Amino acid sequence: MSWITYHEGVLKILGIQVGFGNLDLPHLVMILVGLGFITLAILKEWEPYELLPIGAGMILANLPLTGLTSQPEPGMAPGMAGVLGIILKYGLYTWTILPQFIFFGIGALTDFSPLIANPRAFLLGAAAQVGIYSSFLGALAVGLIWPDWGFSLKEACSIGIIGGADGPTTIYTTGLLAPDIMGITATAAYSYMAMVAIIQPPIIKMLTSKAQRETYMKPMLRPVSRPERILFPIVAMLLIILIIPKSAPLVGFLLLGNLFRESGVVERLSNTAQNELINIITILLMLGIGASMPADRVMDPRTLLVLFLGLAAFCVGTGAGVIFGKIMSKFSKEPFNPMLGAAGVSAVPMSARIVHHMGQQANKKNFLLMHAMGPNVAGVIGSAVAGGYFLGLFINF
Amino acid sequence: MNPAPVDWGVAFRIVGGGILVVFLIMSLLAIATTIMGKIFTAREAKKKAAAKDAAAKEAAA
Image (cartoon, rainbow over all chains, first blue to last red; front, side):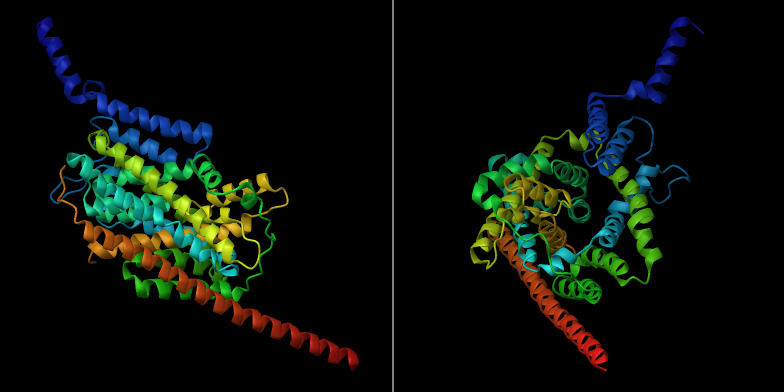
């Protein structure tokens, strides 16, 4: 074999079998983005349980020639499907079961007592969903300015739902309506949830006066009895699902998890839902989300628009919550701090903590955490309802 | 990608319907929870009063 033939052979092998030979700029950029997510998760502790596996999934999916994202297909030879491809196909695209089990775990982890003790918080949770619909319209308006980058109705619903600041709802809704943008909408939702402390305070300050932020509220809510806590998920489940049946996969699982928790008779199941189950599903779901972002999809100018519209939805949701809080404070017999409205975007418990922190900054006597948890958990229900409403428009199960 | 032209009438109906449905459901939940709270608070108060009466009777006896 001549020296030249030998080198041609080596180069051929490099081109076909070695990753470096197949690493192009878009994939390299995506790997760097994945590394960025991992850095933020480790150094800044921004939503580490989500952003770290998303970043890892992103890196693994964008490394060339791994076959990790090959999805199983009929007639495929055994072992040819990649693990990330299997997660994507069965967990997210075809069966879409992972977000529901996350909701089940969240339900088992959530204490609805602050909401049951203060039912008007439901309305704040509703008001904050306005952001979803504003970005839905915004996404549709993109086509008026840049016709080539316009979004369809289903994509607009998926973009709007980012404003609910609720990862599983965003993933479930987008997975069914616009799977092509699922990775980016889910990452946007989790990223903005991680940035609540940066996004919300300026909006709250802009919309409230110092006197309004200082409004003192008694720190204690009435104690909620066990029968109430048991009845709440049952009543809420029946009521919501009978009005919007398509919200059942989300609302049903959320409240089922909560019933397990509050019943007090299935402690092992509740503990499993709160710990092992939600942890396992989080690993699978977040790796899948990371893997659903191959370079060709993300390196699209429309991705930037999705990120911008998602952020706008989150900001409008916060603003709408605060404005509704101001309206409620006018009609409230007791002092009512309008900042509580900002906690209506789900982002549990970060936005409740932000409101509490800002309340203490304005008035050291204030202890708003329990008051803010009410709208915060109402927001989870509200965004699941909004997601179910969108699904009801387009999907026939 | 160039999606079909937007029917703004449909879009605004979706928005209107969505906001209405979210507020309707959340209001119904608020009402149901308030009623539930009133019933259980009254029951608790009744229980406490009965226990107090029983304790008073016991003390008198």
